[in-house]
Image 1 (cartoon, rainbow, N blue to C red):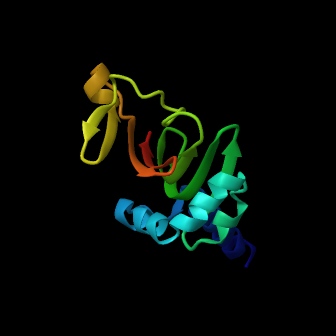
Image 2 (image 1 turned 135 degrees about the vertical axis):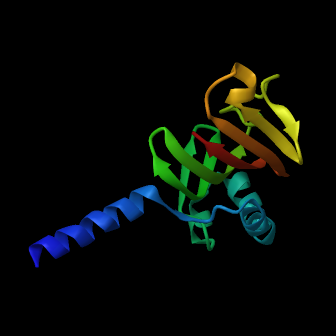
Image 3 (image 1 turned 30 degrees about the vertical axis):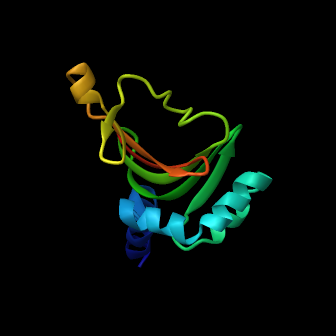
Length: 140
């Protein structure tokens, strides 16, 4: 019985660490559009905690002038994927410092490390949603 319980606990921990949530760009953007008033209110008041109540939001973190609204992801360490909406009060995607390494791609901008440096697998995509918010997808 102890071995069975230990196995269940290990699988639960792996499940928590390796993924869940929403990983579909269109679905995440739809959630933003359907709750745009709540997002705008959060950015105006500086209180992003209420966004945690929106279906699909896993976590909300605020650092200086940036808020990260996490919708999902998977993996650990160098083999990870992240799907989120970010709010930047002062500067577009300040965490990325938009430069010539980001190329226009669809409605947004794409950084592909392999194309830029000839090696590596890091990919970052972001798309402006308006009101200081951006859809962000990162693969490491």
